[in-house]
Length: 344
Image (cartoon, rainbow, N blue to C red; front, side):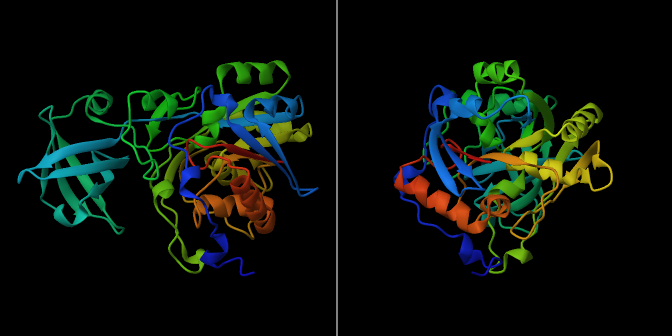
């Protein structure tokens, strides 16, 4: 097996297993428990997480909040266009646009509220543009009125008003993401309360999910792939709590790949978890040595994606792909609105 070959991270997925809607209630999604030591799989439901977590665990959550960043507008020619805002840079936005070939610098897009956007420049990836808006004073008000929830392209239905709630974790607090940290979608307030009552410590950090989620790995040699930067924060108190927990022998449980990437970005060998904020392009694939995370809760990810590679790095390629085959055979639901996996 060539661990650096993109083809190593391919698997077969029947299209009907791609979840189009979330399970309700959230914690009734299925949970595949993957035991790294025994190589065994256990088929559970997400609420059974309470049977695994206790006083010796710290649950780390990403409290980013998804904003409705998919916009639909009209060019001066009358042609309809779609814009997916990715990251605000100063007064401008980096975005993905469609149809890209018709949206060159200088093109102007009109919105129903009267606001306009001009294409300023092209970026170095397919559909990437810098956009400058005119007539927008309240960004979040504008997006709430004009924007749609940016459901991933494998959800083959239009977004609904309900998605504004279901495509959001119950602990989402800080607006800024272009996509949800989907491992967290399975938690309910009741489950989190039960876990804390059992002595589970909960620590929150921030990573605003951006372009890295939407960009596929295309390089035949995965080492040539480059992640785009995403903003993250680990606060002083949170870093101190994590260091104290590690010193007490507790296990750090990352809820999602965004939490893994944040913790690994804010960890130093001699200092442990370090309070930090900034941008990370942390790219984790097999061969990586984890320093900051002991266990992982995650969804099932797309073939050949950087997210799947991160899970393979954490659990091992053979075990991860065997778990995915088990999930397919047992009709688990895949991707953002799908089921979850707990790697212990």
